[in-house]
Length: 213
Image (cartoon, rainbow, N blue to C red):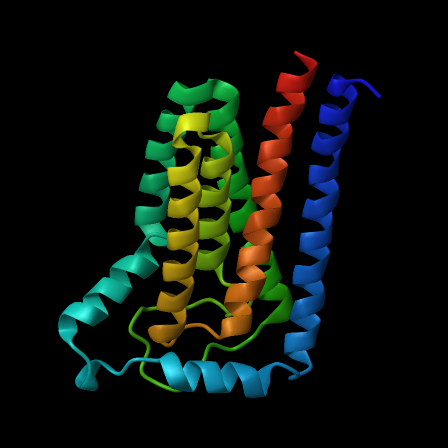
C-alpha cells in the first residue's frame, strides 16, 4: 500500500472509532439506568461536592466559571471565536467542522438526556441552575467536542499547547460539574465520550477533504 493509501486508511478509521464511542455512550446510559453505577457515583459526588456555606466564595466562583465554559451563552461565544481562529489556521472547512460538530453534539446530548431521563444529584443545593436531565452531561459533551477538535485542527507548532489546553478544559469542566452538585461522574464520562465522538467526526471530515484534494 502506498503512503497515501496508509493515510486514507487511518483517516477512514476515525468514523469507526466515533461510532464505537457513541455506542459506548448509549450502553453506559443503560448501565446507569439500571443503577449499576449508583454506589460509585454517590461516593465520588459525596467526596467532591462543595457546599456554599462551608467553602471559600472565590473557590465556588472559580468552579462556576470552569463550568460555564462548557455551557450556556459563554460556550457559544467561545465556539464562535474559535471558529474564527481555525478559519485563520486552515480555512472555512475547519470552521464549519468546529461549528457543526458543536451544534450536532449539543443536539445529540439533548436527545439522549430526554431518552434516559436521569435525575440530577440531590446531595447538595445546586450551585448552578439546571432544568434538564442529567445523563449525559451537555457541558462535558461540549468541552470534549470543542477542545479536542481544536487540538486536532491546530497547526503543528501550536498542537502541544492545544492538546494541553484540551486536557485541562475537559478535566476542569468535568470536575466542576460534580463539585457544583449538578452531575454524577458517570454523566461526565458519557458526555466526554459523546463529545469525543463528534470531535472525531469533525476531524475526519476535514482530513478526508485534505487527503483527496
